[in-house]
Length: 160
Image (cartoon, rainbow, N blue to C red; front, top):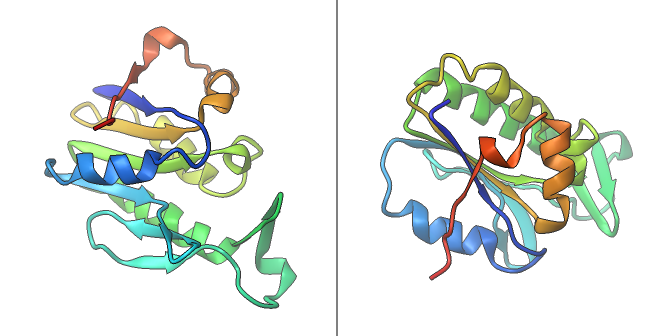
């Protein structure tokens, strides 16, 4: 991997919104964003602009739901997001973005399979920079979980 960048700030501080603005000036990028649209969390395929509602609305089959605090997420949308990221690896792009790595991923759920796959393909992604969005309160846990040190990463400042 060329470089590993982190965007790290508190929950609901506008990380995704600022990242979206930053991405507008970049080419050859792939991955997933997790914007809030009309009060609901979505996953957005950066290259195709396809989006899927991640938050569960109504009484969905509980076997396809992951609950985190007050939020309920659709496992199938996470699976789709993992496929989008896996397909990104095959493109060998300049940038892969994963927004966001949180408590679910640290316990092996959500986008964890995709994050693990990207890290396991570091040796072939030599021209690719990885951008990960991680809330500030989870940075130490994330670094420990993936055996990274502060010397392995760079902080990406996307503040206006």
